[in-house]
Amino acid sequence: MPELPEVETVKRGLQAMVEDTITNVIVRFPRLRYPLDSEKLNLAQNQKILSISRRAKYLIIHMESGYIIIHLGMSGKVTLYKKNDVPEIIKHDHVDITSNNHILRYNDARRFGCVVYSPDLSSLEMLNTLGPEPFSEEFNAEYLFSKISTRKTPIKQLIMDNAVVVGVGNIYACESLFLCKISPLRIGNEVTLDECYKLVNIIQQVLTKAIAAGGSSLRDYRDAEGNLGYFQQSHLVYGRAKKECKECNTPITEIRLGQRNSFYCPNCQS
Ligand SMILES: [Zn+2]
Image (tube, rainbow, N blue to C red; front, side, top):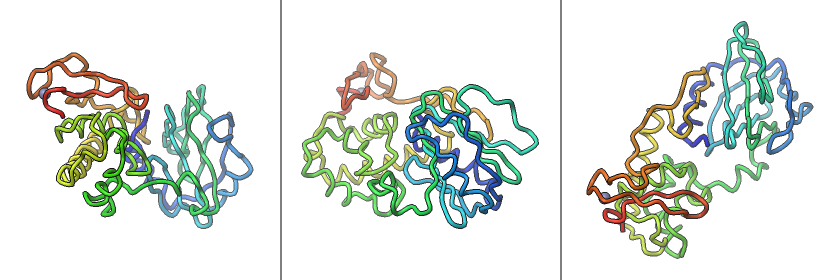
């Protein structure tokens, strides 16, 4: 599933579209998490793109009097083409957002993503319920401590909870907890303020590295320019069940936690 670093990579790739004017939106297969609404999406017609931002894993196209919000779901791919250089339609090419210079094509085999138009952002519940961005000032040790110190939920699930902080996907949660020597099973109220300082710092470092590498969660992931976004990043614990811990040679343990596979070193992490 595309994680925050992949979405950030796509956002950066889409900046070429800023200042373009949208000419039309072509909906081919409307069935996504929210059905594509051709009529609404075409309200974007003749609007200039002012900027393209990211909030959590949502891409937001800001126009003169409205927004297009894109979520990649489990398998969504956004590719940006120059207008005279567009390949043929393939299966699952759900929608094209066409501008005077480019075509943004959204492909989604598993259809868990969405592309919606909204005249404003404040009324959108999908954005309203989100916690702070991992790189924002709001996400600091005191904040994290206040959010988890009364909770009896395992720390891994808490840092993956979008209401606590957005964008810490499974891989990054596993890797960050290993680097902090905290077991994913430790419950929230047993994590100290000192550990929160470390955790905030490490989460930011892990995400920064992943963004620099273009994201790492999908093998066939492509950025908006069609470049392969998967760089064989060597994970410390993620995906390394039964392999030796790189610190202490203990076999890495794999457990199911909150319906996600979790990997940790039972010796280094407690
Ligand atoms: Zn170890």
